[in-house]
Image (cartoon, rainbow, N blue to C red; front, side, top):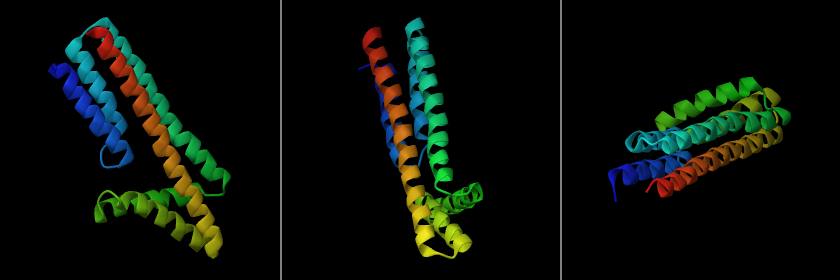
Length: 160
C-alpha cells in the first residue's frame, strides 16, 4: 500500500480516537489527514474532496457548539457557569490527564450551580444537562469525523 494512503489513514484513525478520548484535536487531525492525502495525490478530485471535507469540518465545529450550548441555556445553565466550568476543566486536564478535563468540567458545573442555588437537586439537574451536552458534542464531532473519513475512502477508491 502506498504512503499516500496508509499515512493519512493512520492519522485519521488517531484523529477519530482523539475525538472520543479528548487528548488530541481529533477533528482537525482527521481533516489534516485528508489535506495530506490531497497534497500527495494532487488531482482535481482530491482537492474537491478536501473542500467537501472542510465543509463537513466547519459544520461539525459549528454544530458542536451551537446545539449543546442552546440546550444548556434552555435548561437554565448560565454562560458564566459554563465559563467557570471550562476553566476547571482545563485545570483538571493538567492535574489528571485525559479524564481530568471532562471530569473537571462536570464538577465545575455542579460546584457553580450548587453555590448559586444552594440546592443539591438543582445543581445535579444542571450537571446532568451538562453531561448530556458533553456527550452530544462528542457525538456531533464524531459524526463529522466519520463523514470526512467516508469521503476520503471514496476519494481513495476513485483515484486508484
